[in-house]
Length: 219
Image (tube, rainbow, N blue to C red; front, top):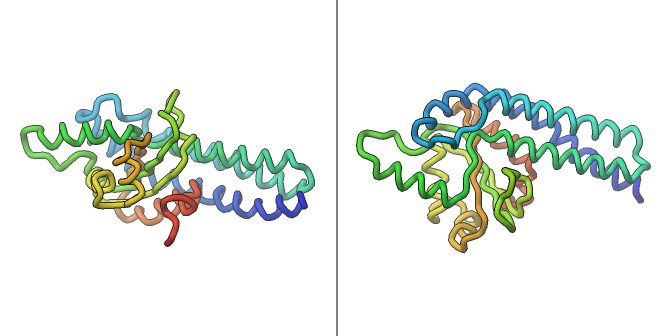
């Protein structure tokens, strides 16, 4: 029974492991460029730099890949199942930690409103291409740990800011809108990339974060 559960779980974890290394090279080329775009407009919102994403993703892939190999070699021990799940949790947390910008839905809306009222000619708030992850949590995020989410949605756009705003005001994903409307603990995390890599990045994030088991599920 236990061995069967381990064997069944191994391909799932392996699928996530295979996606994580694909994400870093897609994000990295655009991350620094995106940071320069928003640094002056959103002080303190930008993380430590593009290298963090690549390094973190590779580290998560190594941890997860090691656990998968261990499961295949010793599929009789319940500890291996726990190790596999812990590795998956680490992979998800690392990907979320590597997001270039992370903020609450309320902060996003505040920044959007400020930017829209600012004088001068603007391209728009966070107006660059890439993917974004919206998470809904049972409680407010503490210690900058975004991994304890209840639901999750992966979106893509050639204008991230506009698409996030659409989701939050009811012109995009209905589940995300409902969570924002009813004042759940909603946060958004950004993963900039070049336009021709958006589809690849979206697919990899959905797989690695199991988003198709949440708000990206097919109806």
